[in-house]
Length: 127
Image (cartoon, rainbow, N blue to C red; front, side, top):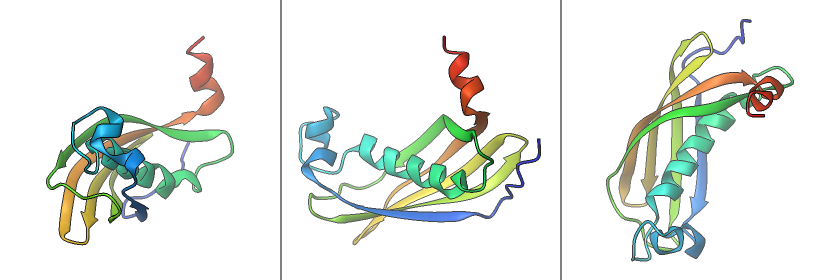
């Protein structure tokens, strides 16, 4: 099936660093700074949303690989922006470049792979 998704798609999302998004809350650290898992989740969500509306009914994407560097800490109450860029499409595999920034500059960079699946068939395989 040709999903008509082409490389070059960009998408951005913003979020505030709340107490629920800190390393202490996630259990990934003992300080109140933006958690690496929260940053990765925002980056992954950005990629997910970038192609979601382009898929036919009953299809979605699932993440299969994430490779991210968390470059700098961000304090609570600050804003973070993530951007995904669809670099390459190989059949049902989508390859993204990811970036995240706060007011001081880039805080994260990485890559992410998603695969297009039929949601019902995917869930049926788990039974």
